[in-house]
Image 1 (cartoon, one colour):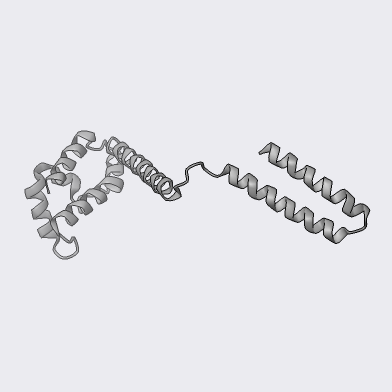
Image 2: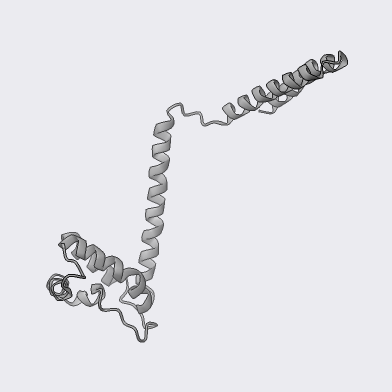
Length: 160
């Protein structure tokens, strides 16, 4: 790229000096602009990725980015499982309850008693960690249930 820039400057000087000496300032500006545009175009072309099939690389880049976002989100959710009860209630409980309701077709607003009954049947003693109405408003600093409980809940959700 440096060679392209040096050649471009050389061409501009070689053409501009005689034109300016002859008093043809308009032509000098026009040619300088054209040569500069060609040099910039060539530099940009050389900086472009070597891959000719841009759609494939774009699709692969999108997939890699989506995977990276998913990994970061998953790691974040797992870290909330080891946090406090307040962390669990704020970050994990809504997500787990929503997954359960979507998987079973339950709607929280229609009949909470039906949702609670289905949750107790399906999750058993784990329902207290998934129940959307089980948010504890007092002493939110006590330890959360941890990764073991999260893993058991996710295994049960996979069975749906």
